[in-house]
Image (cartoon, rainbow, N blue to C red):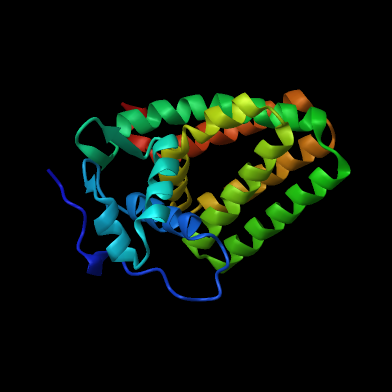
Length: 230
């Protein structure tokens, strides 16, 4: 069984001007460690060990693990503890197909419900994606991409749909990282998000849903080409 990495493998959270709660920062660090393969499937996650590695108390680590479990990236086994969930390619592809349908539904709902302030918020998110694409930093681009989708989910206003999307966080983070690492993906993804935003702004619900679903499925094929060819 895999063990939690030594403290040197997970650097302490920096004591910088980051006013976010420690649980949010721990969640982000652990999520990135799973996405980047530092914490692999089956790794046992000790709250005490992770807290020592990150230089914080156990409570924010516990909260971070709960959030990762809700997203399908961590699983808790009775009398055994927490582990990085099995995230094999076949499982991620299944999650990606479900996500495409749900993201499409969210875009369609957003087109029906969006107010001018919502459109402005999405335009701001798209501008962040454009800047990140020009910068060429994969981590910055992933966060900007996530910001666009998170904003769209909030606009759609369907709490059940949002919870269902959150439960697919494992694919959302890992699949997005793999897709955006492809050479020509960032500019194409940017163009597709711009088209989705235009459909939402124009109130074209069917077009927004179709464009988002097509984007998500194409992104899935970029992230896992071998699996989908098979």
